[in-house]
Structures are given as C-alpha cells and as structure tokens.
Length: 336
Image (tube, rainbow, N blue to C red; front, side):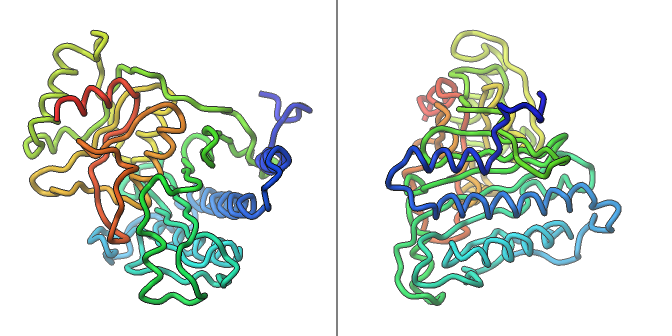
C-alpha cells in the first residue's frame, strides 16, 4: 500500500468523516478514541524498545489477579492511566492491574464515559517476542457526582450490550488498532514513519465458518463434557461442513482473536475444574471481544448464554469465553 496516496484514510480523518455523517454527534466519542489511540502509540514504542530499555522481565510482584507482574505491564498501565485520565473524557476507569476503580485525573460531572481496559494482554509472552495487545470497553456512566465512591462501581455493572465502543490494539509485526462504535469494525495500521494510524481493514467481518480452533488443550482434563465433545468432534469430523480443522493457540487473547477475526474459526477459553467461572475477565477481555465479534458478524457465548447478556457484579469478574465464526459457536452452544 502506498501510504502517500491521496486515498489514504487516517484515523483522525475517518473519525471526522463519521462525525459529519451523524448530525447528533458531539465529538466527545471522537476525543475518546483519539485518546486511546495516543496511548497505544506510546505503548507500541515501549514494546518495541523493551529489550533496549531494560523493560523485559518481571517486577517480582503480583497483581490483584494473583498473576506475576511484568515490567511492561506496569509501563502500559501507567501510560493509559495518564493519557486516558487526563483526557477529560472519563470520570473513572478499571484496569486489570488495579484492585479498585480509578478516579480519572480530570474526570468530573461533565465526563460521560467510563472505560475498562487490559493495558497489556498476553504479558506472559512479552519476553519471547510474541504478539501482545491492549483491550478496552467503554460505557456511558450511570452514576452522578465527580468523585470515586461506593456508588462508582455501578458504572461498570452493566451488561456487555451497553458498551458504546470496544476495541483492541495488537503489537506484532505491525501495530493495529481495531475498534467498533456499534457501526461495524474498522482496522487501522500504524505507519511509524508518520506516526499515524491508517485505515487498512474497512468493515471487518468474521467468516461464517472456519477451519481453525484455538484453545489450551493442556486444560482439557478439567473441561466439561460440552467442551470435550465439541473439540473431539472438530478433530474427528471437522467443522459443521465437514472441513478438516487445525489447532492454533498463541496464548495471547488479542493475537488469537485477531487471527479468528481475519481468518474465521473459534477461540475457546471455557471454565474448568480449577477455574469453574472461567479465567478471562469479563469487563476488559470477554465483553469487548464479544462486542467486536457480533459487530463483525460472528458470535460469542459463555457456554449456554450470550456473553453480552451477562451483567457483572464485580469489576474483576471472570467468565468463560467462546467466540468466533457464527456457525462454529452455534454448534458449540447446541451441545450444552
């Protein structure tokens, strides 16, 4: 692609064009997306220079999830805390790395939104140079007042269908920013030579079927019969159209989901005997990916219920996640 072409569409110009089409647009959501995009640019640079800047490895601490914290986890969390918190668009935020709700630095009575984010998904892969990412989900606030208090978590106790926008950034061979505001899924690739996200994947769709399944089969002894039966069926008989299936698993949700988004297939992270409620977090992992999947023509489930119909009651609530091509997820659900 010729990035100097007059047909090049940058993220900022795309947002402006969408604003012009919507007569009721106030520009606030545009500022939200711009703030997130800025944060991902900073994190992308940090990821690319991690080895040179001595940011690889663990801190020796554990986060609220009981997981080992990487140096880049802290870096990414601090970047988004600063950039999003000072944007003036959010009254409060939830991060995987923080135990409780964070008051945005410039949040006030006029801030309409709250955001839940995983600042650096797939951090266990950081040291081996595997694709990692950032995930976010945005909601309109339902609370009043400008300070974080016992009422503030209610802003996040909304079903996934209440999201007004969701997306992810993948830091791989290139940096891609993928998002939806409920009007399809758009993908932008960062051109480091000009520091701009360029529209490269307009109106992304997930194929109705696929030939790749993605899961951690090391957990299979603890799976329920539904998951075991489905995966065994894929191995022995293929997908619902009889096509042979292959297993691919990166172990970074953003990377596995991005491949599924582009190529089709199914990603499974079910509950098991060790993690009966699932391991992935609802607000900043499951709900955003489910939102994107449905906007792209796919489907997402927790096993027997649509992910987006779940209403969390804890900011770090966990959930099973089955997501991907519509026909494959529907077949999985039919086995419940």
